[in-house]
Length: 452
Image 1 (cartoon, rainbow, N blue to C red):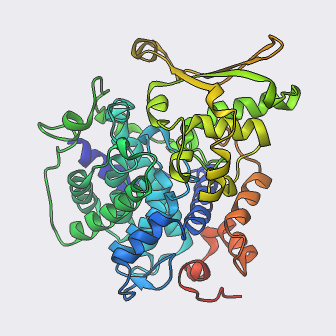
Image 2 (cartoon, one colour; image 1 turned 180 degrees about the horizontal axis):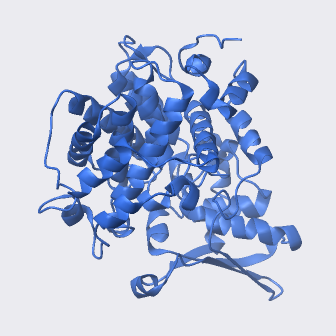
Image 3 (cartoon, rainbow, N blue to C red; image 1 turned 135 degrees about the vertical axis):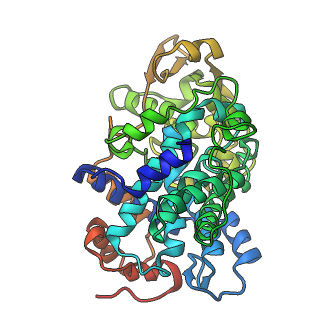
């Protein structure tokens, strides 16, 4: 069997999942829906909506209002889900997995009258498929400059959409192969409005791949590992390669073993280890920001390359600026959505702290030799000669240091701060698998009232 056939067989008849895995899936879906709604008025979302959503006729609801085709709904809603960079990260795919998966699944939900349980099942399939696709290229394709959200995301999510619309293993395999032809997106676009469009593009790709697969369109089933295939073209310098036996033998779901990493800070995840480290430091140590002479950050190569804006000019660049995000953390001990608006950036990007913050990275050899992810370190030097050092190997929100229920709730209601019936929506998402359909989400998409 090829890699795609092996993945498809797993997706068609996945092992039973634990209640923990299903709870984590529900939490990820809820978090993504909140981020999707919060991003509805971002300029990237509105640009995509004006270009493709203007007809406002179709079966799938848009977060910008009205309805359109499943393709267009996935494109617009996927862009919104990633617009504020507040959505979760997923290391096995080097992707923003849920910002692709959830909008893609919602885009076809009305077509098949999806229940909450079916949505969770399909989410779990899509996430595991992203992990399988990502396993062959590991981080090497990401370091090479590919955006895993729109490469791995396009392919793996196609399996989840295919599962939701009822395709068998052969149909899921066709969808995966078609998704490989659609995979694209360069990290050189980070810090521009095109970056969130990558998530929308991937969600659209996944929907179209599954719908085309349902009509019998097919490609090579060895396109992941074969000649001129995904691994050869996207793998980077030292790809791991695919282990078919390992994929076939997988029983414990990646959402439980590795997990997704929801964000506490609305900015690029490459800043989060340093931001979390300094916030932890400030719990026990008083730091006068005006007494800082220098703040030296040491991060991974890919993280360094992601954070290209030492002097951000707008809110998109600010999300990809270590200088901006760390200065905020030092000044305010928190980062919020309100810190990443055009007006806020216009003011805070001029803060005297930003030029004092520098960044270096590990060498390729150091990363290659490491048995696990290397910690990000921070060294702060004060005017009186005091040196403060801290480090962190994992950001808050992952399995090792999960958000509390209070953290999750605070973020959800911050994103839905103007929604009538937000409490009802939150409650139903917490019991998603008991919902016979998804009409309770209507208020967030096309102004339908939330059923009592």
